[in-house]
Image (cartoon, rainbow over all chains, first blue to last red; front, side):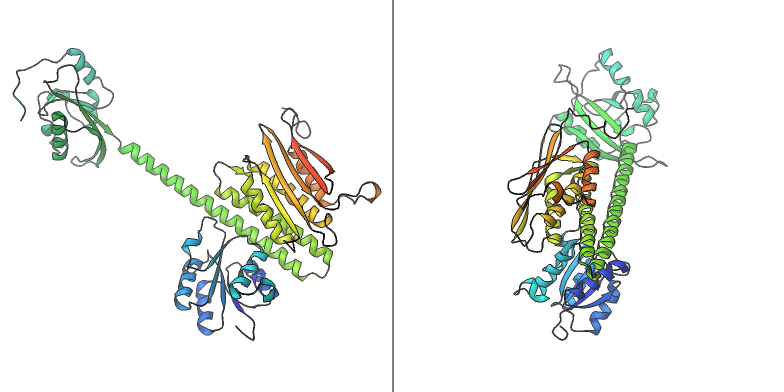
Length: 130
Length: 350
């Protein structure tokens, strides 16, 4: 949390999709950070202690894919919430850490924002996050 | 222990059947001496046919048939305590690659229960196994490739959807925003189909899960207040070709967008219902609402892009569209009757 705003880290290798996600997260009233792969995401997580949620793609170049990254984050920064999106529909939620959310690509933006709102403020309705 | 029997003569017909067997076949005494071997056996395992008669199985060739486990299974078969059915062995010969053999053995049943002889069929499945493995590998590669293509398609659709929604958030004009959101819904409609296709087999699409998912997606992106407006889906167990399902999905998308835009002004509450029923080759798709109904005559709105898309798709399916009053609201019925020739409208006779 930063100045009362939830902080969301977006991890996505496709620049256009990442731009769209950053814009979406900002328009929902959150602070957006971005990384293009797992290594970049981890170095941001190491530098900042105010990240509330990581929204990651699965298939990415580099040492870890999004599934490995989500397990790594769950182990090292347990409070950070996780949303994983993948174009591979065969991927099942069971391969992800408990409590994380899986969404198939292409995702609908309302679905993403609703998922983020319910994870960040489980007590409040989605509108309250805006 | 096998009893010593006086020399017996086998029926000439039995020997002839054994020798001419297409599958490699051995005819053995109870103590595993060769009475006859098929020509195919001698050829396959490179054994001189003149040398086999009276020889022990374990002495055949250069001793490569001395297989203790096989011998013990044959003993058990001879005593009646076991059957060898599809017993698999790795067959080794000097300077040759290992072969995979499938052995079937049974006692000969020719009405002489005290005179036990064994029929042993040997099938070399090495090549068949290798072919199966190559085929399995190909199927696996193919699946990986298809998954990769589907992954790329889904990612490309995500890029298009992201750009459209980003534009929709940034434009000032409400009208342009509406058009961009409609375009986004059309892209998501194709994406729903893509998702169904990736989990379907044989290219046929089950309509109920597909249209249900499509309407959920439309509802999430287009309905600002789900308490006020809902989309009901009532579809039978039909499955259709992928091409047909694209057209049906896009028709539903356009007509739902249209109903959301026109049927419920001033935050009027209501329901949009999607139905699909088929009977043999006949089918009917209905999109109905309980809104304000369509103005007729000079008040009728000019046909937009959505209407053009629906008309083109309906024609392409060889179906007919019928719009009527739902009292209250509007019902659009798209139907195809099998006796109507779908090709006459657009395709020349071949």
